[in-house]
Length: 97
Image (cartoon, rainbow, N blue to C red):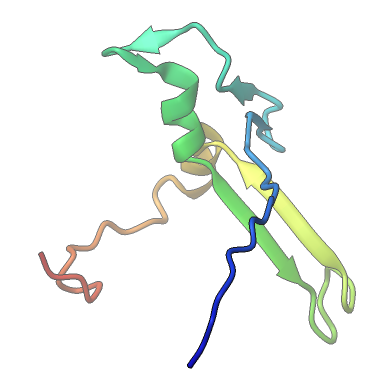
């Protein structure tokens, strides 16, 4: 027979409040009072950020073992890859509804 007691744990998590684009320097914040279609505009923009994080491998131009991070807003990303990206359908991507 097993007997259990309850243990209450308290944990903390990082809750993102704002993010700044490393390319253009624009900061988006959850505390913004700008709304679009009844949604916090900055919240919508924050969802579209691309965050890159990796460790440079042997011979990397970033440096062996260097931890690299970059946060890019959708507007800067679009300018960077305009004319170079592809839109693919969900089935080709392996997703089915």
